[in-house]
Amino acid sequence: MMARREVIIGPYHEYLLEPERITLILEDNVVKEVDIRLGYCHRGIERLMTTRTYRQAVFLSERVCGICSHAHTTAYCTTAEALLGIDVPERGLYIRTIVAEIERLHSHFLWLALLAHGVGEHEAFVHIMKEREKVMDLLELISGNRVHYAINTVGGVRRDIAPKVAEEILKTMKEIRPLAQYCVDILDENGPVGKKVAGLGVMSYDEAIKLGAVGPTLRGSGVKSDVRADDPYAAYGELSFDVVVEKDGDVRARAMVRARENLESISMVEQAVGALPPGPIVAELPEPVVGEFVGRGEAPRGELIYYIRANGTSIPERVKIRTPTYANVFTYTKTLLGARLEHVRPILESIDPCYACTDRLVIVDARTGKGRVVSLSDLPYGTADGR
Image 1 (tube, rainbow, N blue to C red):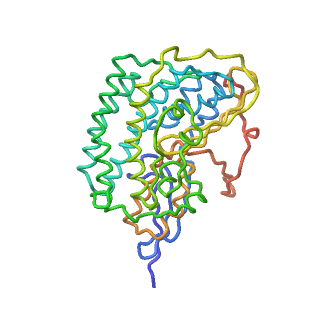
Image 2: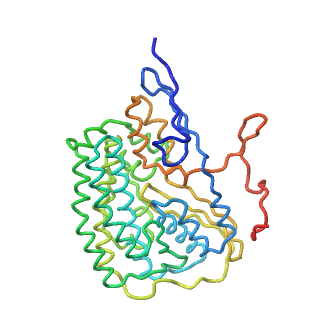
Image 3: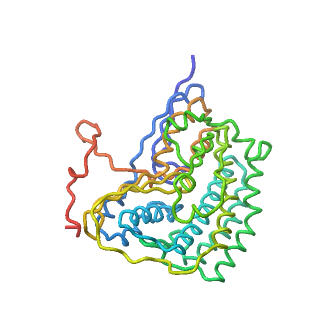
């Protein structure tokens, strides 16, 4: 008779940087059932954004996620600009793109280091994290900050790139190219990390589409989908780059997509800096409008969607955010099935999860223990000034 047991990961666990609850039903240490529970870290950012002006709300969107803060402000600003009818100056769009790709580098390098650490390749972890500091220093040089850069504003960007800073960007891209190639090499079929994660958490082309995967998780299953190419925004339509795809659909494939994307990001930054046009970096805000718009961008983890509804005032009436992890987390219901318990960690890690940016509030009846869906109009919100 097979031994059947339940293993609960979270909501608070030494492996999880953010609280979530994943319940696994195992038979002889093989995963047979998966149950995912979200909602332990609701911060009310969407609601707070409806109490601030369009430009003030940028700083709230930046704090949805620290690792991809610029991706959030870019998606928010792009959506707001389309809604308000703003033409962003070309130089502002190029600067926005440069910072976006440098942020993608720091995010991908961080994740690749954590994957190496998770499978016991500590030397690779230390090497990647050490060399990644050059990227972090560059972000600090451009913006004054290492995490929340405050580059974007509705209408363009808040900081210009001076010639000396442009030179330093190009110098740093040259210096980190060997690191990008190193990440590809360790994920090779015979590489120290590649050998340990090959064949784990397999998800086919059709399954990835059916489960709604996005970003490297989707492209790792052979689906060529990238917002930067499919629906160009910022300056991506002016740059030459390849959409990186891997076909094996396993942890190694999802990791290799990120590793190869680093090389593409370096090339895009070099192109954008070399073609940086002259002129202003920000446009003036127009009069308030009435309407709604859905915008999107390609965050390091995948497609990021923003919805904004305007009511003719300087404050958005509604902001809704769909993060990449919210789309990708349900792929666990496929990739974890049949996995051995010792392989669960790299499979969980393979979508580069950001749980805090995913969470939403769940209303539960204390008497019955049942949850229910509550519309925005049902919630006892006060006025826009907080009363």
